[in-house]
Length: 103
Image 1 (cartoon, rainbow, N blue to C red):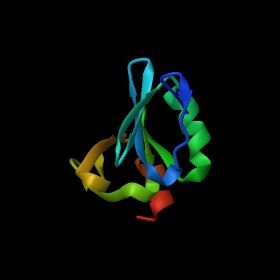
Image 2 (image 1 turned 60 degrees about the vertical axis):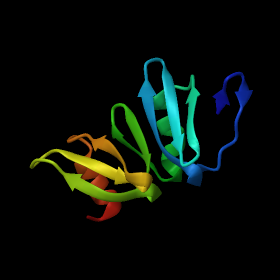
Image 3 (image 1 turned 90 degrees about the vertical axis):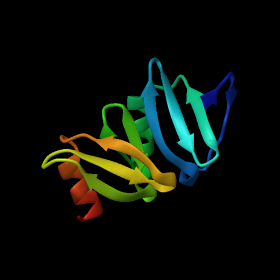
Image 4 (image 1 turned 180 degrees about the vertical axis):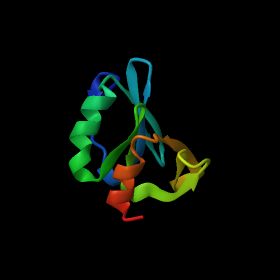
């Protein structure tokens, strides 16, 4: 991943989630956040084979870091991640996540 003019190599297991922030993508790890010019859609496509899931139009999550699925209403959920981070789960992506996690 290109960050601030250099290429950073991150072990994928350290990536908790990524989110869109304007024209940048922010990669969140236990050690902090890194900002990249890579588009979230392109990043999601590249990471999907390694256990990442596009849970919302603005978020990609590492399935290995999901601790629980929190229901808000009948069709609204969020994901509780490692470190008590919470991100939204799009109602259009719930069925796909249910299949993947067998929940």
